[in-house]
Structures are given as structure tokens and as C-alpha cells.
Image (cartoon, rainbow, N blue to C red; front, side):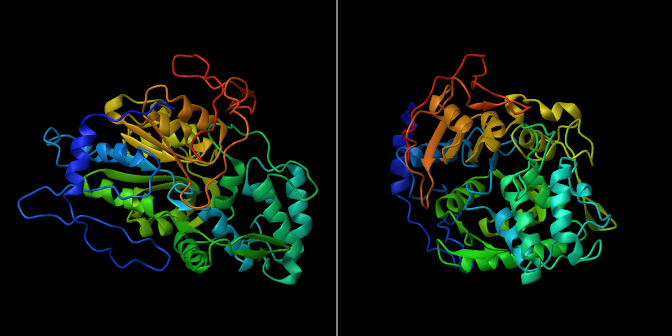
Length: 435
């Protein structure tokens, strides 16, 4: 991967050395303290990116802050620069959607479908999955009532729900979902939001808050029992990322979260990083009389209830264009002019590829060995990609090259193919060098 250090960074480093950080603020339990620089009377304090980054990444992030921040002389009168972060495994270690799903099962908060038919929970659920869920769960509760998945009697139901959600297959191995566009939705991610049917957003936020408290209090590496399985039982904020969020905010950036976890869940967690609910874009349910339904809101040319455009790969692009930049209709699904795109983006997975590519200045990738994302990041065709190991329990070096030239890309129908640059040329296979 190409690296460069512009001459401006030498000046940035000298200025940073002259600043004395304020003491860390008192944080909520499990939330990393954030070091900030206080404002000065009659001056424009320069936010400083904290330590703990790989290689030159900190210096390049500092250059971003210095170039686009509120103190830059050429910025008055211009719109605030936009930064967009993915959430799960980008700002936090582990997945807050998973953490909430496990909490729902342990506490018996997933409702049997009100219509008595599991296919109503997802347009992509297969008859085999609907039948398996019916067999395992329906005798435990009346339609619309919560299932006792945290009790011994509900173990088989919890296991079936976990299999469909976590593996995309039934316990017997039958495919659980079919017929979806692999570039605009992921039915397992969507299904978690759809399983919140019957509750109000406020109740889901309360469930997410309880799960958050448990997962932050649990020691790193902890597991928990869900049904008959042992699953991950802890989450941590990345101190480096929360520090970066605060530095960007202090520099005048408009900072957003785009996540493929349910909207109410991410709202709860985002507060711990200083991001308000109105700057969170998660999977959004259609509500009826204030209650969540299994239908999902649409974006671009996809209407509400079609359940075909969530915050996933190209869907993230659409939702960011729509919610952040006010683009409506089919135009939201297309790449916008540079002046109407985020200048910075951060992600960790192939689900983040499109909105990362849209960023005009820098694109930060946490290395989780995801093929398409790492192919594009290591290719670094325009010199704007940064790769950083995960801050907690980083992945080991991938043994072989990423299959960029053959199967690194997944098409809308699931067919693998080569990863291509914007000009159509094929990205050659890439070695894993940042781990």
C-alpha cells in the first residue's frame, strides 16, 4: 500500500507538540475516556488526534483535521465537512446488534409473529426456515406474545432463532433466506430489526441499554449462554475511534454513524461516543400506531415496506445520500458530485465498501480480512486509503493473498467476480501487510 507524508504534516506535528491536553473527562462505565483540547479565548483551538494508531495513520488523520477543520482560513461560508463511521467493529469491538439479539433471547423478548406465520417476519425467509421456526417455537406462545426463549422449555426455539439469524440456515442446514440483492440488503441483519416487531422504539432502546450495560461490564473475552450455545458476551468502545470522533466534532465536522444494526439499538450505543440519535442511520422499521412492524423503510427508488434497501453496501450509499445530503429518489442510489459527499469515512467490512469509496479525502479501514474491502484498501488506487489493525485482538496476517482478481467481489445475485477499479481495470491480488 502506498504511503506518503505531505510536507504540511511536519508543521502539524510541531503544532501538536505545543498543545497540552486537558485531563480525561469522567466517562460512563466501559466507555473510554476522551482526551480533548479546551477552547481558548480569542483563538481557534486545534483538536489533536490521540495516540495508538498504526504507522503514519495518526499523522494523516491529523492532516485531515487541520485541512478541513473550522480553523482553516478558507472554510468560512462553506458547509461543514461530513465524516461517516460504520459502527460494529469500527467504533466498537464486537457487534451491538448481536449483543442485543442475545439479550432479547435470554430475556424472552422476541414475539411470535402476530399473524402466526413466520414468513411475515421477512420477505426472504424460506419455507424451510418458517417451518423450522414454527416447529420449535409456536407451541410456546400465542401469536403476538413474547416467546420464553430464556427458559429451559424455550431452548430449542432460541437455538432455531439463533441458527437462522447467525448462520443464515436452519439447525438442519436448510437455507434460511432466498432471493435478495447482495449489494443492497442482508436478510440476517434485516431480520433482527424485523424481530423487534410489536415493541415501541422506546422499549427497544431500553432493551439495548440493558444489553449495553451487561456487555460493557463483562470482562474482555467473556461468553454467555443463549439457548444451548455459548456466544460472545462483551463489547468495548475503541478509545482511538471515540477520540477521533470527538476531535472531528471539535474541528467542526458533521459526524454520522451508518450501521446495519437496528436504529434504536445504535442510537443507544452512539451516545457513548458523543453522537446524537439524529446523526445515526441504522436499519429502520416502518411503525404503525407507534409500534414497530416487520416491514422496513426504503431508500431511493425502493419504497417503504419493500425491505430491499437497508444500510448495507450500496444501500449505505443510498441512505447516506438521502439522510445526510438530502438527495431524494433514484438519484440517492448513485455516486454524487464530490461537493455532496463525505470527506472522511471509516469501516471494517465489505458492507462498508461503497460509502468508503465515496469519501473524497480519506478512507479508514480496520483490517478484519474482508476480501473486497481489503482488495480496494491495499490497492489504494488514489492514495486515500488507510489500513489499521483492529485495536483490540487484531486479526493475524492472512496466510495467502486476497483473491481480488478472481472472486473478491460479490455481485447482486451472489456470483463472485473480480474487484474492479472505477476505470474498469481489475485489481490484482493483494498481500495482507497491516495486521
